[in-house]
Every structure is written in structure tokens, then in C-alpha cells.
Amino acid sequence: MKMSEKEMAFLKEYRSLEDLEREKGIKFFECIGDPPATEEFVEGIQVKRQNFITTKQNQMRTKDTHRFSTEINSDKVVVPTDVNIVTLPKWDVFENNHFAMRKRLVDIFLKVANK
Image 1 (cartoon, rainbow, N blue to C red):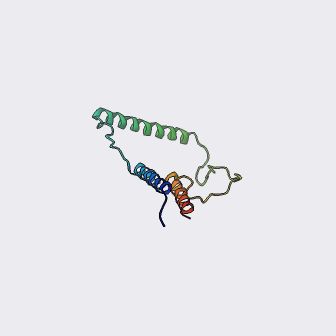
Image 2 (cartoon, rainbow, N blue to C red):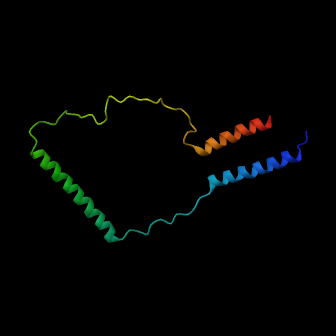
Image 3 (tube, rainbow, N blue to C red):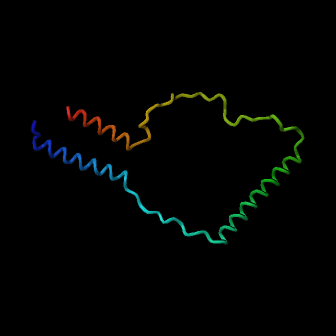
């Protein structure tokens, strides 16, 4: 069975679009990143971190010295337990994968077009 000129033009255009989509997924660029950290920068980070840890320890020590009841086995619930879940879980594998979703739609289109 011989294809008409319109069909050939359509297939040619479709293949070029398909190639563009494929190239989009393959394209990458070079990341040069930040310049190496200076000694002063690293020391500044270490001092900030040590100050943070010391402050946290002092706060905990102060809190503990003013506590008059035991804290052992007193777990607290972090999230509310009376949450009413309105929506049901979705099992759509293509929900966040836009490239796979487009590919699936193109496959469906091709099946229908080929029939």
C-alpha cells in the first residue's frame, strides 16, 4: 500500500518533532560551580556552627534546671490524630512525569492514526 503525499509529509513532520522531544531530554550543560571556599569562609562556618551548638546546649541546660517533673516516657503527638482525609490516594504513574505523559499521548495518537 502506497502512502499519499500528505501522509508522507505528516510522518516527516512527526518524526522531526519526535527527534526534538528526544533531544530535549538529552541536552545538558556544563556547571562550573562556585569557586573553592577560602580558609576564612570555612573558619567562619565552623565558628557559627560551634556557637549554634553551644547556644542550644545552654538553652537545654537552663530549661532542665527549671524543670520540676520527669520527662521520661512523656511522648508528645506531633501531628493531629483527628485528621479527616478527604481525597483518596492516586495511582497515576504519569501524574508528575510530564515527559512520560507526553510520550504516552503520542503513542495513543500513533495507534489511532495508524488504524
